[in-house]
Length: 619
Ligand SMILES: [Zn+2]
Image 1: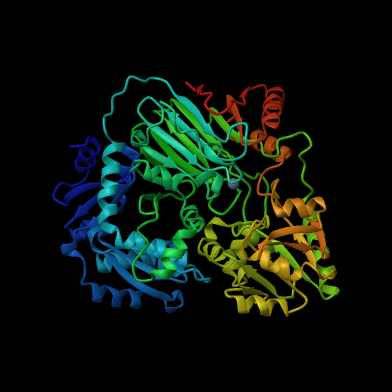
Image 2: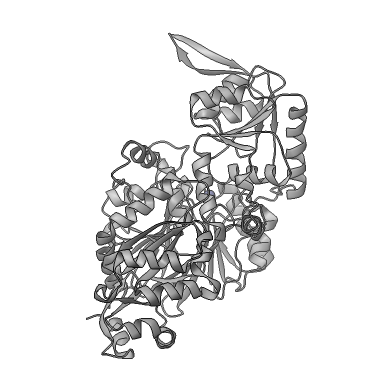
């Protein structure tokens, strides 16, 4: 018997408790006593305080109200404005899931409605938000979680047993092994060895690279997927998550920790996932590696993930759901903050990165824009420039094409347009619409400004100027609607519907091609930025075809989701706990070295810019 289970049992009234189980690091107490189920809150709060573990009390199914009667009662208790669309049950866990458009109304003031549902139906309510813009990805993931409830219950129990096991090893040190993303941008991956555990943070690919350079350096003696306790992902960019599905193929069977929006965006990245879902609407997509093994945590939620590692995510300000990863190792032995991709400045969509860490001895920090010349123009100037450039084309009756990534940049552009009162139609092509649906599902992850607008029924994403392109016919229609704006994937003109739009719009000098994001070497976007005006676009009938760029071309700087040099320095300056050591990564080699040297001078702390595989002992 695991010690912690005994402790919980002994701390609560024996006659009320039928069993105690683990779901990951959470302790689930089952009861057959309706009175205890309704009135346990104070008693359990005391035990949580003593043991510092999360505890949830659930009824044995024998005392739950009949399902049909429960549904009826919930509809009576919850105000109709909540717009409940679905109520379903997970009997194995005594949960009733209530899917509503306004979850706040299901919770009620101070949780009153929620509590009333619990105490009258003897089920534990879980509330799901139905996003105002429908998302196939969210629907798909919820379906997987629901149909896999048996698998998940056993899986989480197994994880819990591992976390609370009395593990003995012969290590008494902590070591960080960089497996990718050091002295480079791409394939981010770190292995952390602690006295009792091994965890992996991020596992990405290098989109531009070929062969083994594209993947993290996993062929090392230290790395064995079967030995990992946890895989933690900071955010859903390919260079941080691209290799995760392969980990599961290579024998990893453990949990994948991330925030809920990160899980959705991770699934969105997996194009197969969408494909499978659309072709096979009846059966849920079991093939997605990592989704049914996911354990999602909110910002600030503390969770044990291994025998001596405690994880907390905090906002990184970089993309929706992106996190700074705080790892507490041992009981006060060491604290690591991992800040690979982060932005320490406000954008329309997100608050600046979190800095209020109680303890942080080692900080791992990006240096993408850590060079001495890396200073972005101000946000206000950037937006002004963006709007005036667009409006010039509108006045001339032309069309604007903005190639964009589906996630974050597209939504940031949408909010700039909406908040500046833009009143021409903005067409969205590629996966942008679906990604926007995911944004609308998580207002609590967005900036306070966005939340205010959404709760005041003035959601920028729902403005009528935005129209979805879902078919070739829609595309035709968009081309005939002038003036207008088209935002389309791919962001660097490496394929996707943006190429169709480019072919159509390129030859009219009234039109404008506007770049708002980074264009990598070797891409068509970069070539056009460099001034190429005649570009090959493949072969047809043995003849090579070219495209003539007669439209205008502009680039708007300053919308980056990364911190510039000053923002990085301010971030360190404002940290709640001064780090003893900063390890620099995620930058060009020379920039990393220079940035590490500067940090050492400015803050008088130990710094390092290791290469991949150069491990560092932290303790
Ligand atoms: Zn990123």
